[in-house]
Image 1 (cartoon, rainbow, N blue to C red):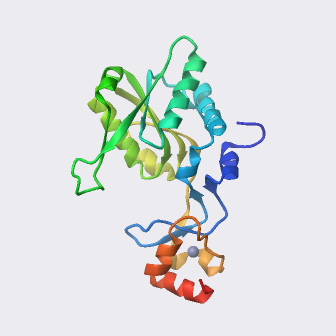
Image 2: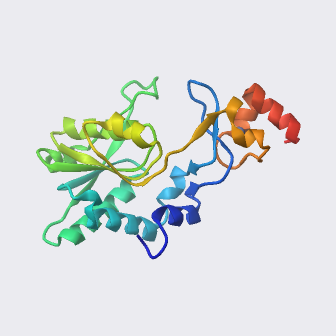
Image 3: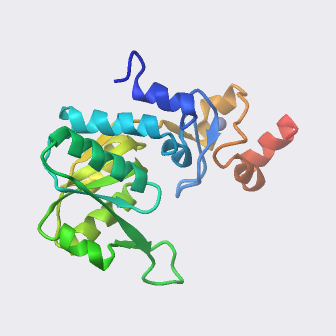
Length: 234
Ligand SMILES: [Zn+2]
């Protein structure tokens, strides 16, 4: 780690990881959920020194003792991370260069944006075929993006060695989802959430963070959200 501070603390200082707040998350099948933590995916990859520290941390110690020839990242957010990871590993090995590639998101059916795949441009394909590939992901939520990257690498004839993530938002759930491949996260955030009707933060009347998450949508569509809005004069 860097000095006395953990990576989680360093990311907290940049605003990429928020703790001790009251947030409304994107609604899921079971309805609206609240919690106190938030990982701001857009903010996590904009500090090069911090990311380089993460890359060295992952590459130099035993976190990532597996062997790989290529790092492959999904466009666009994780490309920078993938490049720094390949560089850190190359510097660590000294005798060879680890390549850094990216795959682009495609929608096989233009009318269905929920279904997507990743694919590599043709010039990259010889760099993947029969090579040991590490998938780089910035933040894993459901793990779907990482899973689609694994499929893209395998389709191109590469041998997936695992997934290296800066931050895993949903603990064991994502690890299980990516099996038989291994997830190597630097930071594991187990985001605890509560259904809107059982949120202890709401019960304590703690103000809701209006700048992050889906608070405005919640107050516009959920009955509890509308009641909260009226009660607090928002
Ligand atoms: Zn709440």
